[in-house]
Image (cartoon, rainbow, N blue to C red; front, top):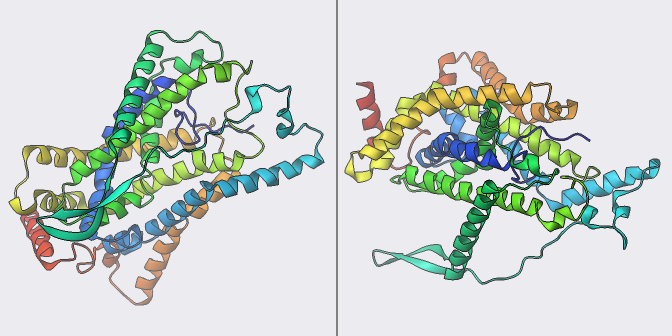
Length: 422
């Protein structure tokens, strides 16, 4: 069986070796995922457009990045569809007629135990979500805000506290079962930190274009740092609780009663989906993030982008607070040096190692997803050469398309850029 080489706790389709992976994961969520979320929200909020047009406006040679991100989103939506998983299961099970092995489905019977059986929990209606019209300054607007009943807040807080207490109890007194003792070992080597950095990008779906779209829905004067912190914190809490809950369930009687190691996956139907999620999509997302940082920080300029972000964050006050100024300088360092170095090291360690199960199919899928980047770059170069255009325009931002849509906002952005050049 080809098992994915990801070292991550139970997030989506991934399983870890130890529960203490949450320590580097939480650290990387705030040191890697937060500045990248801040970066993509700023791109969307400043340009008011999608990922397809952003990089074409910054540097025409980078137009293919948006197309590759679109391919990545399409694959993510397709493999997340339950219908596709059932179709793959039927297809692979049909091959069993040519073999002599026993079908996995035949393991389920009146005399079988819980080892091969699936637990299905049906969603029940706990309450209703109510939408109410939002009023601002005594003027009714068309948009609506979501009002969550207080019972949902109580349920979330109770679950969070319960899982935290149980996780602390497991930490103080880890189980002694041979099948689960490795799940609670502490391993904080450099490989674990690199995996945590990569997993933080995968969890936030950075490089897909969704964060950029969220930013494009904001008004020009908006505190991006607060929005980014809320998104990252909520994601960290949810997935950390999910990992802790999975660790506790794995040690419960449901799995211990199986009298053996519980298989993480069913090897007869989900191999293709797991390979795409753990190998191909992870590698593609990391490479797309590197391309985004290269185009924006290289062609447009990280300092120039920060000047425009400062205009949006400061608003009509015209000045940044000390906290906002500190965040600006910190993310500048992370965008320019730290995050590119970490992502390059992660790609080398995870996707060029002999331990990784990267087969020919994974390589072909990765090439297909990333192929628009060199193809579009070559097409742009040929077009500029054919029409005798200045090649420097391949790396020059479009003055009319890049920037805020309103004239007043554009004047503010140009003023800050002039101050920066002076």
